[in-house]
Image (cartoon, rainbow, N blue to C red; front, side):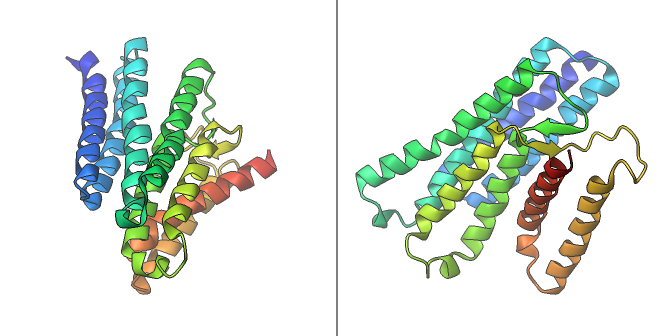
Length: 238
């Protein structure tokens, strides 16, 4: 039974992504975002459990990639499209098709990222390219923030296009050769983990400040931006 547990968790990841698609089409974005978050937890647990139980397999690795493509590639892309087209009456048919086709770059980037990850030796100290679960969480956090402040964003002309362009740009980070911080600690000493601890401390401080300012809705988005910023600093140091 134990050898099947990681694959069960991976399947739950895929099922969560599938349900996220359903709720996105129903325009129940908050539920879709929560499902993406739940899927990312399953994605972490399947690898963790497989390592703890020593039941890693090629089958599990392939299943994980297929699940991640749906949950962290296709589902976020659909969320971006539906959130962008909330004011659908502003879009003509051909504009919607162009928008949908452009956002299709997101699952393409995710597929390329996953294929690259599967065929190259991994480095425990960092990821090459933005991990697809991190990208999906960026979409989830950004979508929530955008919808919450949509009245403010609507003061800008063509704001419906700015959001998907930004998300596609973040998606492009998945196929770059930039290094992104991994939290697989080889040791816990401060000197070799300065950026990891710096990111952790900064996230706590920012979270407390945003809560005090009554802007808790921004916490996840800001923490993910901090992750990208600290990862860029990591690239400058290596």
